[in-house]
Image (cartoon, rainbow, N blue to C red; front, side, top):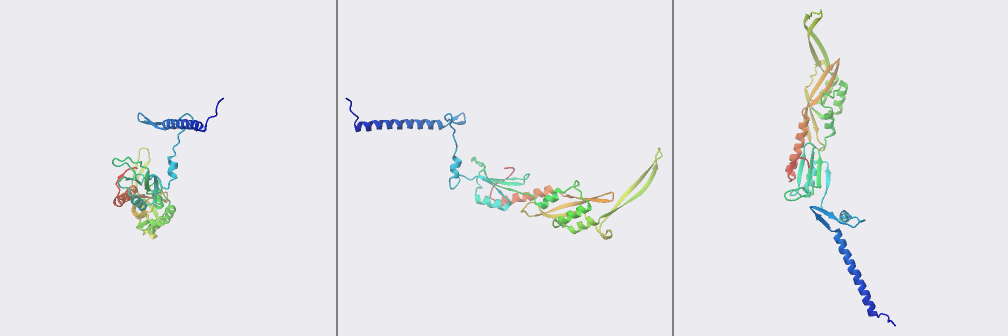
Length: 289
């Protein structure tokens, strides 16, 4: 006859089973941790996971659940130089940052976590300002040169549309020239020569007298000056232009040639770079960020 186990024997048996389960779980956890532990092999890092499983990085999700980010990053696009300077001063990162001035792209970029000294920064916390052309400068630049000619009516309309940009000798004078220019051509024959084939070759000079205004009393200017802003939210700049015209079959074609507009753009941008050097407190380098 067998006896039923006592209460003490039952407790001992349950305790043994629980202990075995706990030990087994500990072993499994250790094995799982060992599987997920990064391995470095010849400079490369690997993460071993069991078949059918993937390892998901939830670092960004955890960070977004926090009140603040772990570090600063991102790019801020600013619309004037004053805003860029204020942002740079607010970040107070002159010891870890560079400011890059790119004349070709007309862009100034501050990299607040750059690679300075022995620090290998991520270079992903930035503020940038792009010096965009103003609409008025864009219009004058687009119509510049002999490839873009105007009839008298077209030139007069162009002057009227951009009246405020012309400072010297005055927009009204150019408008009067455009609307009243007349030309007379005189031909003076100086000699005649009979050729062997019986034809006569004539030598002549052509004199063109161009006048404008009432009774031709208006002097046609050779050049004029523009006073306009090159960059948006920037200061005014003086730019010279040469007035050109051509007579063709009784009609007149006008055009103008800006005096080295690329130099004006370069000088205006150089003024911005100098302002950043003087007011930001950062090291400014010329080049692309």
